[in-house]
Amino acid sequence: MAVFVLDKNKKPLMPCSEKRARLLLSRNRAVVHLMYPFTIRLKDRVGGDIQEVHLKLDPGAKTTGVALGLKSDMQLKALFLAHLEHRGFAISEALTQRRAFRRRRRNQLWYRPARFDNRTRKTGWLAPSIQHRVDSTLCWVKKLSKICSVAEIGLERVRFDTQKLSNPEISGVEYQQGTLLGYEVKEYLLYKHNHTCAYCSGASKDVRLEVEHVIPKSKGGTDSVKNLVTTCRSCNEAKGSLLLLDWKTSLKKSTLDLARAKGIASVLKGKWRGFRDTAAVNTTRNALLAEVLTFAKGDIAVYTGTGAMTKFNRHKQGIPKDHALDALCVGENLSLVLHWKKPILKIKCTGRGAYKRTRLDKYGFPRGYLMRQKAVNGFQTGDMVKAIVTKGKKQGTYLGRVAVRASGSFNIQGGNGLVQGIGHKYCNLIQRNSGYGFNLTKIALTNGDARKVA
Ligand SMILES: [Zn+2]
Image (cartoon, rainbow, N blue to C red; front, side):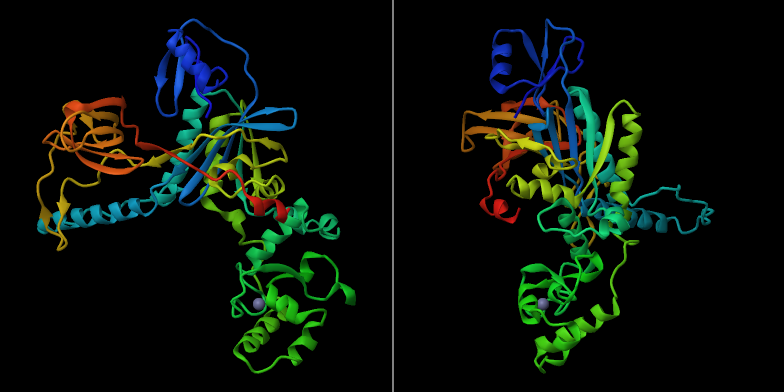
């Protein structure tokens, strides 16, 4: 992983290698500015050459892939890869519980008159868990722009390009598997048939999905999107080069064939999801794009890509499926350079505290007593600490996110799981709580199968 470098005035310079960072630090030419992501600040430099760095995002429901790449000619060299793990259902659960607490307290004040119900939602309101995804992703766009000079931001916005498919000039063109248009078509077909076989709807238990011509090519069928469906390989082979009606009459009374007859009828009727309710209306991604555009203000170029384009780039270059690598593949067709041996950064959204002042037992009654102050012996829950324990059963070195206890005996959540009962005097502060926990995680970088697909 590249190390981020700032100049004397905290302005970003180009990231350097880990070795160079080590040398700069040991020669006292630099100081550590930030531990996660690792950033150093040069003591004797102001300004320097800046190259074009792309920040790429692959927004997901649970994990967002984040990648920084250095662009030169038509190549993109990976500088930084990260997984941003969102909080997901934790938010709605916490809010539901908080609502219950407040309801109970309010009910104790039953004699008070009801408050006037004048609460409204702003336009553009999103559910808190969705808003969180937008906010935390944007937060990291901002954080990374502070330590690295980002020239362009690319993000995946839709699964496939509806305009490309409905454009008569292109949809008339014969599509070929393995081309970018082929990937757009396949993504659309998968969406259209809900990732199952259009004929048997999965009754054959065959998971291999293929693109099938409804009217076979040998009988004058075209490559137009209208003539294509996804089927499992069993159905594709069973149908062969028959016309749909001929195949339907040849079907028997087995469960599989009955399912097929049903599927054939709906294919003949042309019943499926249209373009309008496609993934293009993905609220999270649209909201994120709007926020990123506001942040960029025209100084940073922003571009979007389709999921099909990402898949095309990934398959063509034999890159395995991973959120961070997917992010690197977003957008235009660049050849990627991956000199990657080290694990990547896993950023976990944790929030800064709880939504409640007490914990409950399984019957919903208050349990125990939570302390009211947040800091214990100078530490707060969420701080990143390194503990070197020299005595007792817990001897060893622990690195991770601390959870403080009033007793001064802390828990540390590290890469190797949770360690309990580490004394505060062994702990050294590495970074204050920022609402994120950090870990390193390994990802697969080679994939033999991927090359065959392209
Ligand atoms: Zn099938």
